[in-house]
Image (cartoon, rainbow, N blue to C red; front, side, top):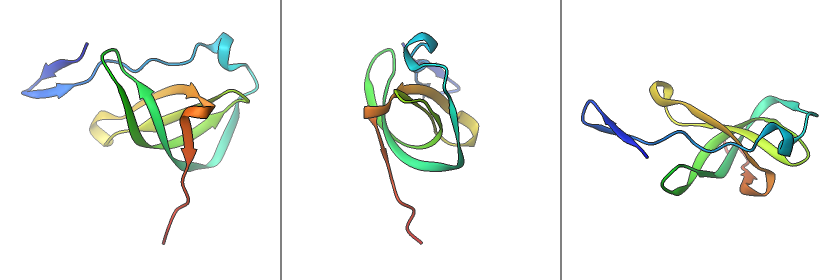
Length: 87
């Protein structure tokens, strides 16, 4: 469950795909790619504007949020859609 901190709602920690399920062949993405991803929190499923940092054949490491509240999680690859950057 989420909690309150300084009169602001803070969501719970996101669920991440376990290492055994995502595999060991991790490829770092250089440069990181903008993406849109589904992320599961303890009390809900949300879609976030994220950055894909690394990937395996089955999962992607995504990071989202602002500088003061960055979160990251490994999610299933099918939960991520890469976006193109528009100038």
